[in-house]
Length: 76
Image (cartoon, rainbow, N blue to C red):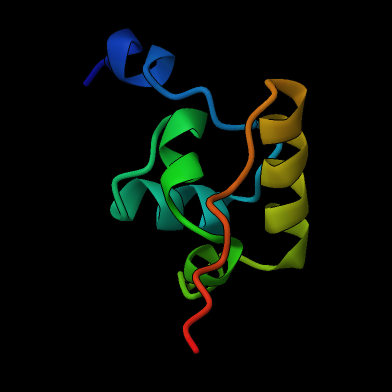
C-alpha cells in the first residue's frame, strides 16, 4: 500500500522528533505546530512518549515560527 503524501504534507511537526513522540502527538490529534499553541507544556507532558527532549524540540520549532505553547492556567 502506498503512503498517502497528503497525510505526510499535512504535518509540520519536527521530523527529528523520536517515533514515540510522533506517535503520541498523532494519537492525540496534533499534526500541526499551530495546534500546540492551544495546550500548555504541562498538558503535553502528560502524553506517553513526550519527554524533555521532545518538548525542547517542539518549543524550538514553535519559537522559530513566532509561536509558543499556551500559558499555564493558574488557579488560586
